[in-house]
Length: 391
Ligand SMILES: [Zn+2]
Ligand SMILES: [Zn+2]
Image 1: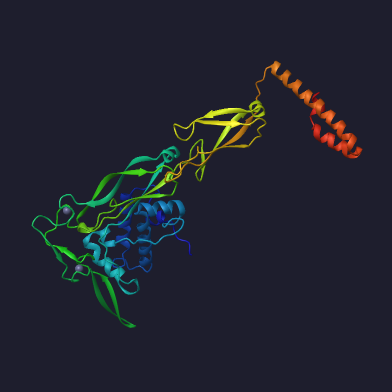
Image 2: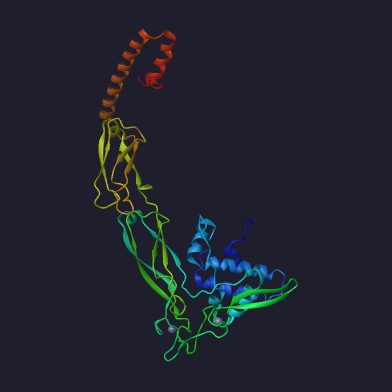
């Protein structure tokens, strides 16, 4: 695959630009580069590039995918939707776009009056993912026009079949080329593919039956959801043209990283700090769990080593669908106390001396069994490099 220019660069906008800025930049470029207007040899190529960039950046889900993965279809790659140019330009521009897209190898565009699915991203914390939550999200969509009830028809008006295409939404064009006659289907320039006309259009929505609106939607997030999983809310996407079916809203969940817990599947890992003496003697460390009601007591065994794991079953993330919970895995970190009193140091000194004597006795008994050469090495190893120096 050839490398492509950055979409933001193509449109000349910043990465954090809002939709209005992106649309304005696109319209400006599209008008100057349109092949009907611009006769420079690379205009058509650049026009296509600008179109492609806009079709991705104007779609929040594709844009998020592009930002994250460098690919509008996400990491796996799904089928792509197209942008209906006549929607973007309104009725007046539809026909010149049709003539550009319609001819030759491009083939016919399909009529689309159904509302598109829309995608938005929603970030939640790990504890919200653990207990499940309801979030209210604000977003912009084309929603059914209130004034005409989504019909696109003003009072007393009617919807009629488009006479130009006889309701099919498409017209067949015959072109004469050097290869002979070529037939191609294009979207009807009169009804823009819907196959229908309105004799008295609603003024608010100009006969579309839908208007831009800022809306909020409640998203129910089940306990145990994972990053990247999506919740589909039926009928909350883009409204269809004049009462045609409305698309869905697809809310992709991103679970933010937590300061304390690291999630692996349904298990949670947590660091637990214990004093070296506690690690030697064993202890119980109480700590807050991922859910408020959790009672977590990490039982650190006697003689616990640095990095040892203590598993607590049933205290990890709830499994999606409500079938139990994963484990909480505490990873023991040992800290060495450096604030001992003189008396405490003396006590430890005594313990160390006792242990050293025990080792020496053990070595002597080993020496009787092993050869003298091996004994020397073994003894030195066991004693360690510092013991004799400190004594
Ligand atoms: Zn038509
Ligand atoms: Zn209306």
